[in-house]
Amino acid sequence: MSENILVCTAWPYANGDQHLGHVAGNFLPADIFARYHRLKGNRVLMVSGSDAHGTPITVKADEEGVSPREIFERYHRRFLETFIGLGISYDLFTHTNTENHYRVSQDIFTAALNNGYIYKETQQQFYSAALKRFLPDRYIEGTCPKCGYESARGDQCDNCKTLLEPTELINPHAKMDNSPLELRETEHFFLDLAKLSDQILAYLEDGKEFWRPNVINFSKNYVKEGLRGRPITRDIDWGIPIPLEGYETKRLYVWFEAVIGYLSASIEWSVNHGTPDAWKDWWYNPAAKTYYFMGKDNIPFHAIIWPGELLATGRKLYATENDGLMNLPYDVVSNEYLTMTGAKISTSRNYAIWAPDILERFDPDPVRYYLNAIAPETRDSDFMFDDFIRRNNDELVATWGNLVNRMLGFAFKRFDATVPEPGELGDLDREILATVAEGFDTVGNLLAAAKFKAAQQAAMKLAQAANIYLDRKAPWKTIKTDRDATATTVFVILRVIDSLKTIFAPFLPFTSQKVHEYLGYDGQLFGEIGTQEFSETNRSHTALVYHPEKAAGVWQPSELPAGQKLRKPAPLFKKFDPKETEAVLMELLEN
Image 1 (cartoon, one colour):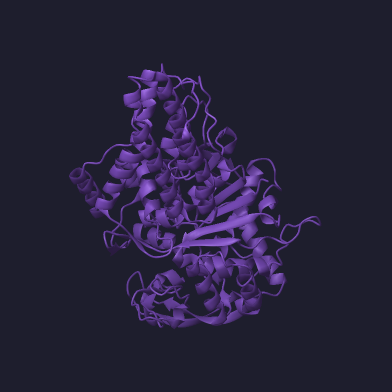
Image 2 (cartoon, rainbow, N blue to C red):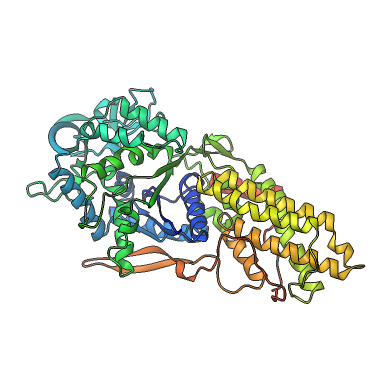
């Protein structure tokens, strides 16, 4: 039976381009997962968007002397271009500065307040006399009290991942000018995480054995150490106003409202499709599964705080009498970090390869393939130039690409561009067809379990098995003596290639589509990705959208018929020259 699968990726701050660490840790695994489930026939909704209100946007705006809106709109457009180039197939990639997101965020605030999970408290907050304003947490740096890291932020230490309050920092100072800070009193609203602690822990202990150890162990330990109320408002101009009279200068703090985007984006997608309640199929259907993809620095926000926010609403927001409780995350799929040639990626030092830049120099599928091959699923991994070249040349070009090109070219030339009629299949023929057919379960089960590296490795092993079959059958030799036997071999290998094209499709969507067309099929394995303008009452915005209705691919072994006309093939991948490729990558890293 078809399942409802919600795929969510962490919302990137719209203050700069995405680097390969972001792609490997967040966007690519989610896309592979979504594409697999679409091929399986499941109802997939993949959503996210640009975080327009994070303080990194206002920091960037201050640096450039422009408005936060100008910054986020600039990089939101860049994100859309990047995701289209990489083939990241969001059903909707929107942003948090929409009227819809404002409304949903304010409604969640109101519901949690009415349910007694939000309280007011006067706290001391750092004030910069030099800048003449209270400073948001991201404007403050200091030494982490837990691990001693000297560049911890006012909300979180990037080194040990501890969530912090600015007042906990040792030697705090303003990030912008290193000026000293003073504490002044200000009133804020807090989410009562301590009051939600037992519910959150019960949720984490309920059947989460399949979660990655880095997620579930961290989350349980974090809650057991003791949760406490966390402020959800700030004295800032840029952001979502809280829906209460007398607090016109207060804005919802970004950590509270950004995760609400998963819900607001689902609602926006439903409204855009003329089915305003369709989002409930993923949020209120208890059989639906909701998956959240992010880097390890986002674990507490998705495994603890977002479930806490949903619990605080009573999980009945916008519910009718026929709706149950809103679904909490089914799985939180978090990756570790990607390093670059042995060194930590640093946006501040510009030590990274940026996704838009690499897409200008390389085709997307080799980039996707390598990033997934080294994905930091359980520990940090390293992007090595020589390994990128080797995997492209030895695996994509020599193993999979060569198999496709030489056998489709052979069939095109020797059998009049037609799938030949086979004779009786022999043991080797039946064996390779069975092996590849079993691969749909093998690879599919690994994909469903979010084991993307292992799934891709299993797919490449099938391509290697197909090459071994060909070496044993040697159709380039038998064509001279036994055309009928050769026709059987070619028929079998074309069916194998047809199946492998589908198995590789979640990882290599662009070249898999080419193979689909070379085999004589019309239409698309997947739907189309593009941008679309949407209008609201007082504003309009551009979003990334996916059109699944144009997809025709299915996750099942080939039924390629004899007699189908083939199209002339071309090489799927380009062989990399080691010296030239290393020079290009070094240029991208240094620039």
